[in-house]
Length: 265
Image (tube, rainbow, N blue to C red; front, side, top):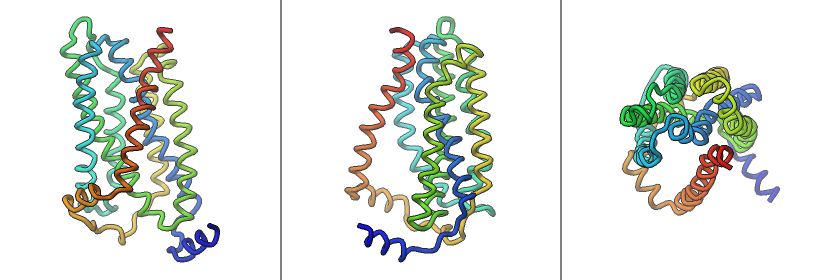
């Protein structure tokens, strides 16, 4: 195993990035991940328990949103692969998309309606807000994750930056689970959303100090239909997708139910 690993690393390109760049890139992971964690853990509780949206209405809206989310990610990724900016095709989305991404995240927690008085208006606000938020989330998140293999070209770089990303990911997950209900109860849910949006924005903007793009990665290699055909016949990808689907269904169900469990038991 050691010999095989040595052969792989010796045959790969020389590292292009410094430890500073890897720490900066890893730090941006906190800003990318934390809004999604707060969204997954607290959003349903906020709209059904705090804002009194009928649970069946919320479930229907989230089901439609899930279908939209499954479609918009590959479409946005395909579009981004074919964008051309002076700064590259990834970094501009991170630089100019982060503010609308996090403004729309904060708006999720600023719903002006109450389900007891105007449930239809609250439902419309809820659905429109999550659709707009997810569009910006996909644009920023896709760019960040696509930049990873383009920026870190060999095994050692990627494993090193992956370890740093996991450190910040763990911090983001812990904060995203533990703090929203505490801040929401004491300071208000709108304040909670604004605080997390601000922290995430700072993390992403600071992280950009370590991000660069190479001209060698600017040309797309597959058409959209060829990419879909390849994925549909790639057994490794399909196996991983199935396993990840089961994992996310389980973990997201537990995370979403946690706030209800704490309050009602």
